[in-house]
Length: 394
Image 1 (cartoon, one colour):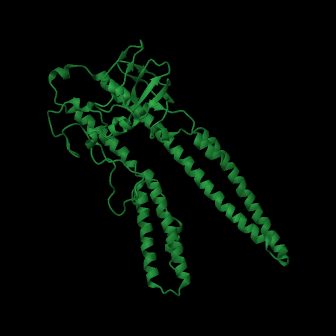
Image 2: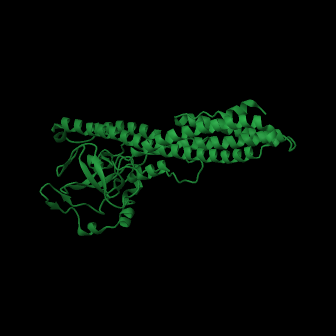
Image 3: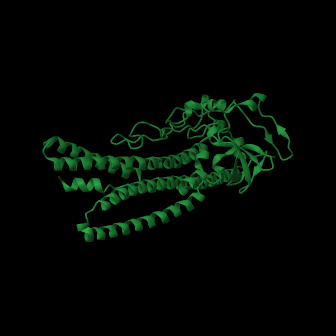
């Protein structure tokens, strides 16, 4: 058996970029093909070679699983390149807007600067939310990894305990040394496990329950504004405590609006009374509204396709296949109509395709004077993750 093949399967290169994972996947598939060829070439009597082939095949399958798992993270890297390109395209399109001289005489330098600065603030907040997701994932992976290691160690302990109990007394001296070394090894490992468990318990106290950002909340949750958010009707400041009423209730067109409570407790009814009685089930249906044709394909982590992340050797499929610049444009196209105006920018869909029902949250100020929709990126959920703490303690 070629030692190069064995070493390649025992020392996979788990990079941190998507291309590096694709390259390593290609290497593992080459090893898999070579092993298959050797298995078909040798006779059934070559037990040693067949055993090595089985070992290599098993390691390759595990390596491929690891690559698929890591690609679940790295496959998102194109999103950031997409956003960068979109920022540039949006700026270029705004420069090319076909408006009359009355518009260009109006001084908007200050508001334009403030709008871009606000987006820059959102970009910084997105980094905070990215770190929360990374810490959450890291904790649960490390906890699961440690749990598996403990299970394996427990099985080895039971096996060795039975083996030492059955040893003959004539080998007492040698078996005692072996037992001493084994107990020392067990003690060192147990000490490591204890220290690692303490670290996980401490980490669990600072974890943010990110599942509250994706799953619909069943009851109000406390939150904190991460930045100022201001409209002509209300203003919320950074650090202000709020109550999150619904994290999937924002801005579905012609379906529901909210009563906006001003500082003087005056209420302005924006839509009909029917919107007040909408149930959660109705809201879920509303999310797939008439604008769904302009939404991009979302990654489905529940896909049964084993190549849902790494599609080697096929070209990678971008998660953002086209830009939605507004009504009347075809996917992947540049500006096709010179008579489009900036009104198309106010559509109730994110430029990247997500329905704003998932991007805006229904919140209320602590004093109850303000009830409104705000971008979810502006909101921090400080509630501790009790499930993580329970898992760490166990």
